[in-house]
Image 1 (tube, one colour):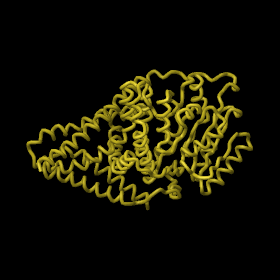
Image 2: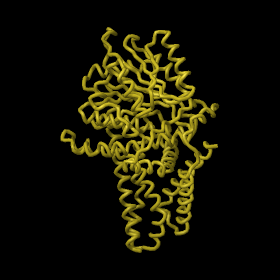
Image 3: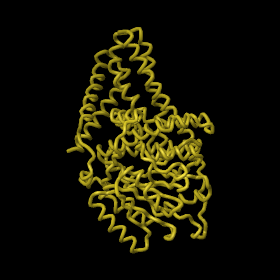
Image 4: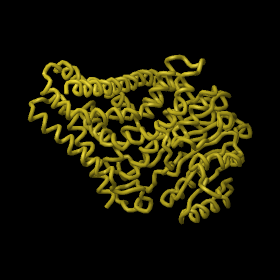
Length: 491
């Protein structure tokens, strides 16, 4: 029994060290980002003669987007760029009524002189990656801008991004910051925006400033066509074709530019099933990309050790959900171990300091909150941070499973995140047409875990041992919230 107790402690300690390492890496990126944001250079100018501007193809990959397809077509057609230098492709794999709606909008803009076409493939092979590759064959631009269906780029988007390619012939891609059209729609969208702002205001800025690998985020950016082709083109062997191509391109010698001052507004998933499908794709695809490229990163003789370490943290960051899930599962029996093995109390005192591992992470999210205009010091930030932390923990079972299947090489289909066009709270039914799931066995397991961590809270009071109480409170609240939203949005 003593040996089993020690094994539980060792596993818990390893998970704790992993979370601490992840937290410290984010803190380091915060420092890099702070310095970089203080010295943002002015963008290079475009040539005065518009005939010298590069040709741009705008690709709009869509699949059954009845709620938003008209909006993205109109936004692309409104881009302020010389008509003779702009080509728009609606890469339409749809199978529903949106095909006719899109065709009508495309025809309307064509009559007004916009070079736009609706591209239909014979099948959906390769999903989004396949659509992008198919469209690239007929693209007329030397630069390729990509927007998902839920984005609404500003008319001056290309004028703010294209000049960087003229100033640097080895620049492979420019990524911009995501904005949020419906951040205030619900608590669920507020917490998503909170987390994404940290990625776009701190992580991407810090990685780019440190000359480390960053990733094209799938949309809201511009590629040099030559870079895509030299890096091997779009490939569909991972669920994150954007992250995969980003690493192949940078390993080939191309470099990227991240522009935090240029914002591309987009819609956040407003329903739990849509959020789940997005989280599954991001986390499983990240693990698949790590499986595909980590070895190549470490075998490279050109990359410095620091960049290899940051790339490892980048590609494996979703594994933090596996660590959080395992820590949670182990934490309840560890309360019993502590009572049964008083000689091991030194470890629990040390583990009680685990809250310190959140300090660097807190600094990371606080910086993003402040840089995004947050006010009120910690009085407003801390509640939102704790809610975000709880919700992230509540998704740890779902996301950990996605990571483990990705690392194991298990193939699953690409499930796109349905867009509902939900911007205001008074519109609540449009999402149902494209539901991707309902209450299932995983929801039942999440409900069981909420009760399991509630038991941990009860044991804390029973044993008069409160070291893990904050952890169990967050886990109970997080899993309870995930179950609540899953049931509510399935109704």
